[in-house]
Image 1 (cartoon, helix red, strand yellow):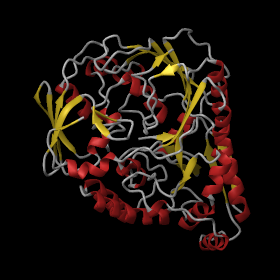
Image 2 (tube, one colour):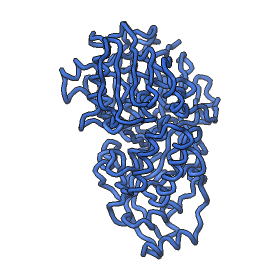
Image 3 (cartoon, rainbow, N blue to C red):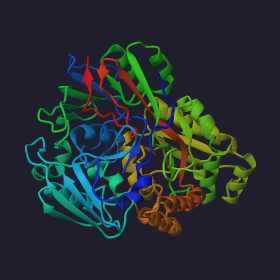
Image 4 (tube, rainbow, N blue to C red):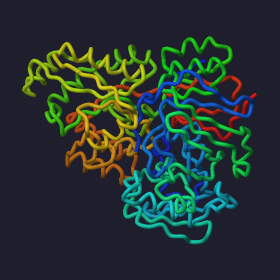
Length: 520
């Protein structure tokens, strides 16, 4: 049975209020639609104590400080516990934190930590560990550096208490700690393995890393001494499938227990399968395409606007993802604090698009290369963009690129147009700042607008939710004018789950949370 509804609630809408409360109690990234060598079958261990989960791409890095892909997070959430996490309703709840206080000015966070927790390597989790992780995430080579920008220092008060001081109020701070900045890695393991730590990840989570065979699988085993309840599954295997249909075939045959991204065209067939449950729920993500402002033809704003205006979002969703999405014109999905009129879409207006092409000096159109992923749905994505732009004389040449290479090309601005999306986060800042502010790590389009930078910075330090939303509304007017990214749709998270699997709870972060899983 499929439930098409928006379930998650934005915890950060109350962050401003939390700043006046003490003793509260209670857990960057581009995604592509799967881009690794295709698998047609799985040779999986048999037995009820093994769960096999498909991944639409090979995880580039299992080091939270260095990673930037959704598939990384799918594995990381089994290896690492976080300071905070999201519950099934999308609310922020403490995990490794027992309780916390926030100073009235929003600049000092005091965390009381839970006791008796150990890493997989036997070392203790304590305040020194939190200090180490915070400082590591602030280093120049960390992809978390911008998230930790306002952290001045982390002080150890006692073994179970850490005090984090910010240079100024930062509304998304707790929300950020529900993701990779809040994942606690073993300091001893980092010191032991150095740059190779990504191949030897050590956390406090429900599962222990065994091996990562690039392009094929990641294997984890149960943490026999897990602090947060019994782990019932002995082994989890994450298997790489770039072809979603092949993953579904393996789910039907019993070789897989989970499919992480069910192709929409496979959903109806799975609904009729008595052995499989389909979970299709609205999440926080968006999909679309970057237009590189530093490379012709997209140095020209009017040509970027023409491409943006020519995409019929509703038609795109019907054709490419069979209606399992919401038309998008912003990074803010329904339910987000910043969601509103900025996300409204309109049908393409032929005369408006022709006028933009004329203003851009290309009245008869132009051509560009569009980098897409290697899966069938990537190809369809590109083909539909081609067909929607062709009537205006805009010719699109498709280039199929492996997922990791796409991320690298994006970071180095080595593209004209690039198909990558974002899996979304609870706080609007986490889906906005790094993508639109000058020189930030996910600003692949290299847009640079001083007024946009100013508004984005103001929004992240404003504590009042209503005032924050007003700032994002202003910022989105500039984003629409710049058109450096074409927002097309907000994703549904689509899982296929064997009915032999029990204990699964959907969480709107799009992650398969494994700690409570069991198997009949």
